[in-house]
Image 1: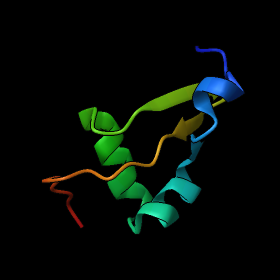
Image 2: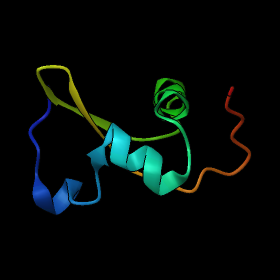
Image 3: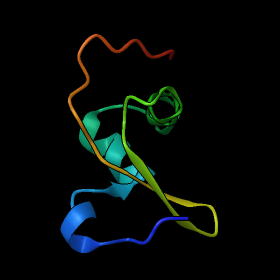
Length: 62
């Protein structure tokens, strides 16, 4: 588990907010996290923060 640092991780959001900001579904965001296209930070108890990004050429399944 990683330590959350607001200075380093201030742009990270929970998965739902990240999906909304990127215009994707939660499933699509999780697929991008699994592929390593989005940076993520596990913060305990099954919670995950994700850094929204513009991902060029990314192919996600519906």
